[in-house]
Image 1 (cartoon, rainbow, N blue to C red):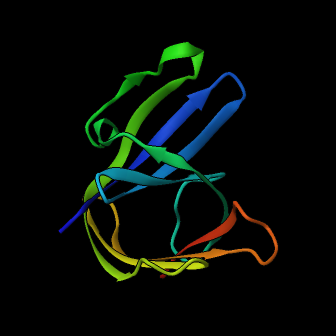
Image 2: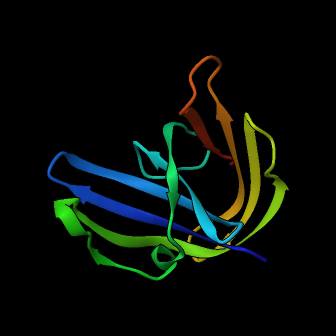
Length: 118
């Protein structure tokens, strides 16, 4: 099974959570405005793919881009990953064991909603 990680990312502008899924040799990544919580829709922004090193990395990010700390990690099962506007995965992490649904907002290329099913 492929791996996932959720990083708590603290910058001078505040804190967000980076949700990363291993896919085709890189990490498909979304920035969440809030900590994942079951039953709560969280606005998310899709970011460019990240390097696999972030599956294990914790610490300062070069260029003054803040500090990352692992919030959760583990494996995931793809329920629906190849759709353009929807991603659904089953997470098997140390904190989260459940289904995540990511849905792209209509007419907004990088704007998504992250939803952890209760």
